Image (cartoon, rainbow, N blue to C red; front, side, top):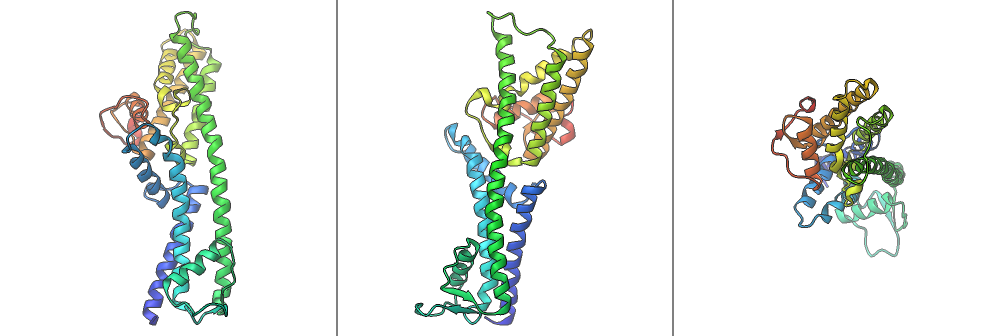
Amino acid sequence: MNPAAAVLVSALGAALIAVALFDVFATLFSHPRRHSLSRTVISVTWSACHHVPGARALALAGPLAFIVVVASWATFLGGGWALLYWPWMPGGFLHAAELTGAGTGLLDALYFSLVTLTTLGYGDVSPAHGLLRVAAPLESLLGLGLLTASVSWLLSIFPVLSRRRALAYEIRLLEEVGADDSDPGPPSPLPASVYADLTSRLVACERDLVTFPITYYFHDDDPRFALPAVMGHLLDLAEQARRHGTATDAHFHGGLLIRAIDDFAASIVGRFRVLGGGSTRDVLEAYAHDHAVGRPAAGRHLRPGEART
């Protein structure tokens, strides 16, 4: 390989590694941007599952998106390091005597890169040049870090889903009690402590969506635990409290809950391209429809601030 081509290939490899590392950092320690690698992969996976017949396809969207994102990180890292090694093939490497010939192609560089990234260390090919002897252990460390980061990310998702499902189930119970003719039903308005608890838990769910955007794409088949299906009723409860001016505590906490719902709607509009009309209720209906638990809400794409009514 001539020097100009070697520089170009090495630069491309370094760029692939940088993209993967930046995306891992943004996903795990920051808020990934809309056009980042992981967000693009997750959005495409969600859209593809929407076009698959059957509601159960959406239940696979979240886990499948997680697998595809981790696989894309490994592909970018493995491919990037392979491009860095390629110009050094075969003179920069030592080959076992049992090998029939020294590999010189991209496939051989990819083989060494994947063996190093996964820390398998077969030993049939090893770096001989000084720079390569430093680069190979660095790739192994990145491979170990990728595995650790992926497991940590997966373990962080389950508490988020648990909090969201618990909130949805409590709202569902309040809805069922209110609709049961054989039950006297809850007081109207509810105690102020109930509104305060719902507000704090909804705020936690909204922050979870910001910190772990992938959790938006985990669909719940059981309607008891589907937050998109009950957000409309939560808004009804908050508006009910605001109509009771005589119960000052409930009136105040109902107002806080409405503001929390507005912020939640603004977040899903701005971060997940949820379509809706001009009000928070329209956005919540679109949110439910996006998760196949409600009717479609005709409208346009909103700016985050337009969800506040």
